[in-house]
Picture 1 (cartoon, helix red, strand yellow):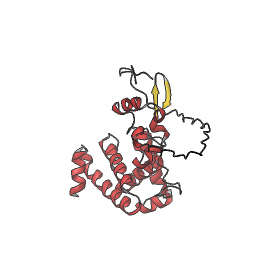
Picture 2 (cartoon, helix red, strand yellow; picture 1 turned 120 degrees about the vertical axis):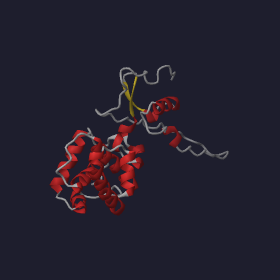
Picture 3 (cartoon, rainbow, N blue to C red; picture 1 turned 135 degrees about the vertical axis):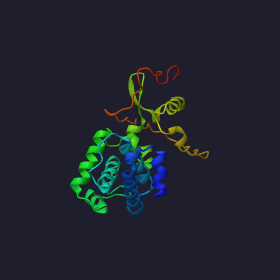
Picture 4 (cartoon, one colour; picture 1 turned 90 degrees about the horizontal axis):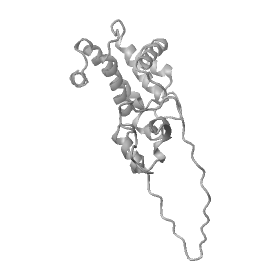
Length: 220
């Protein structure tokens, strides 16, 4: 348990919960190594740390119950049940993998999601490989309006990144369009492109009242 003990200290887990944290982590790591991937494992470890740093009453429940609840909660955010995703698992398979009943796992998952205020596609618990396509990651309030920052000028993206509102600068991830080559007899016809509609959601990130107004002073 040396590895999990070092994680407990690094994640500042209270001593009274360290043994439970170590047990949960061992179960999560083994399950993710066998059935999921490293991204799931890291997010689940982080969520287990959040639980064990809390003031919840954790005693009286088996470590496997909390471990299964954590993995289910992270999977719920990232649509682990969707067969089009890779990896993917059903709730029944997940519960069976931890040796708990589906009802027990679902109860723990619901408690975790309610206590941590987690919602579907929650940017805080989204897999890194899904961030780029998660619309909630990029919805930012600008001068009282919600906009998709991916379609804003790079200068705005840089400021949003510096403020910690987005995980990376979208403009840096875009591949340059190949140059069009045409011969002397080639006629190029340009068609108007369709405008993309930005998704809106009630769960948007907004800045605090005492913070500097986002993109203040930037000219479009």
